[in-house]
Image 1 (cartoon, rainbow, N blue to C red):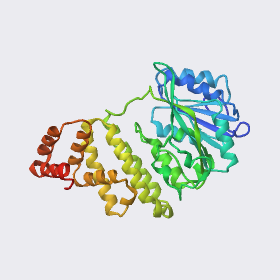
Image 2 (image 1 turned 90 degrees about the vertical axis):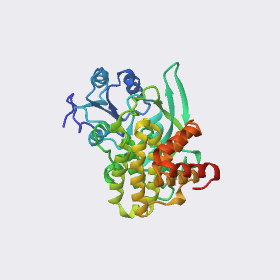
Image 3 (image 1 turned 180 degrees about the vertical axis):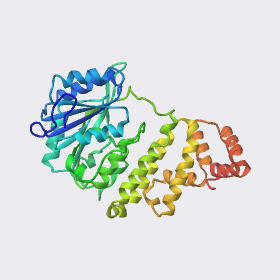
Image 4 (image 1 turned 180 degrees about the horizontal axis):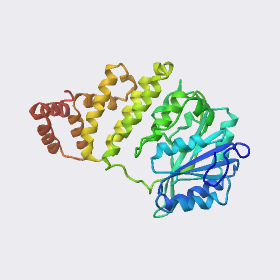
Length: 369
């Protein structure tokens, strides 16, 4: 097989690392991203740029690297979305290890040297670090984000016995993965066009399958905050998180030995993800999403997958309210967002009549339903 520049995939020895860069209309930041990978002190790598039908100058920027550095190659494809791009990149990758850098982010020049040294020294399936939130304007600013606390770092961790990472932000791009591990465990992305949150399914499949992972506390990747192409107001994005959990459920159901002790963990994880999604989508979609959430969690409860012991007290209270009445929860959350008690009472009266209003009063003033 050849790529678009006649470079043979089988040419030369396989590199130690393949870096995948999914690209779609990101001309403003792409050069900084690719330059940061090109400048890595660890040089035994290939960089696969997956051009997802960009219509801006992204393709020309990619070409400037492909034509001058034979470690860079490009996959040109019609626009089919992030998941399909990543799966095509994974299929093309030759490296012993896989790294992912989003095309609007950039990395410190020693990142892959440190990750490679760690993953080989400890013989683990994955190594992952913390990251920096980055703003370009009004001047370059970085903020350290601690996803992985010191208690999880600098030691080999087995996600089958320590399950904290299931509840943490996916951030798949601060890592190196053993390609053999990904292939053997059929870990890939949900290729739904136009979908969001596809890092969630990928990351969760890693945790379901891995037995040896290693976390580093420092941060080497700059995660850009000023290019948030918002999906908040896009109705097609509202249920993407549900699609990811359907895929996670499919994956877990094919691994019944893991399902025995992970299914309840994943139900708790799903609650956190759904709640996060509810808070970020536009208000006009929130109540409909809560109805879907109620349906999904009633099914989990009926199947015995809901372990209340895993829930913090306030989350237990919130989920109980959602199962009982999504309208009640929605009104309650609106009140927390700054709405007056009078407005909340009017909403309850309109939504559920006197009965719901009475329930609200009992909860608010007497602490019971």
